[in-house]
Image (cartoon, rainbow, N blue to C red; front, side):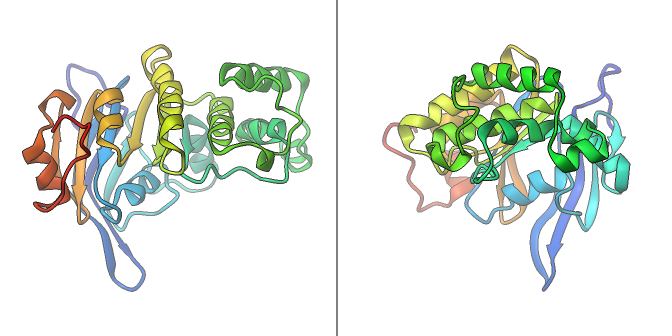
Length: 263
């Protein structure tokens, strides 16, 4: 592990590779670091390996090659209770929200605390009042103070993603992963969700690793960028250094940026 000035990176990915059953290679030799407090965005075409990368970081997938360290701990081979402890520290939100649609908003948020709950109460979905108060506070924080009793599927897409953020906060995480968190939302809602994530990063100091398609969002919210193409890391740098030449290197020479991207 590379340690700079005695500070351990939040994430260190080393020579990461992933081959799915059937021989489809999703990642090849990917190496990078995420420093504590960074907002690192992952760019790339659909199928470039972005989602696979995030799922390898929190061990929803087991990489076939390389290693991942989180806050200095190698997590690639964790199993059982050690893996559960890791997932309490690493929260993740998804493109499709991954809420239990028939459950109430409050129950979905409270499920973020299951990792530290005793077995029987967690099976019965019973939570102490202190946890319920925390869940209500997080709903207020994401602008949904009166929706706790609503079914999750009664909410709009943007509201469901805000519930997912509140659920993630119930984990009391140190690291926040977001896999295309606004891809399913209307353009008008995307900045609203990204601002919530930005506040977690800028004001609360959570380290963020977020995959995104929209170049405008990437350069607006990220503090640093990496880019994947065909499962390989092809570029990393600062938002202010991202230009049309790099855009074409990532997305192909025939690709054209959106007219309002500034490239």
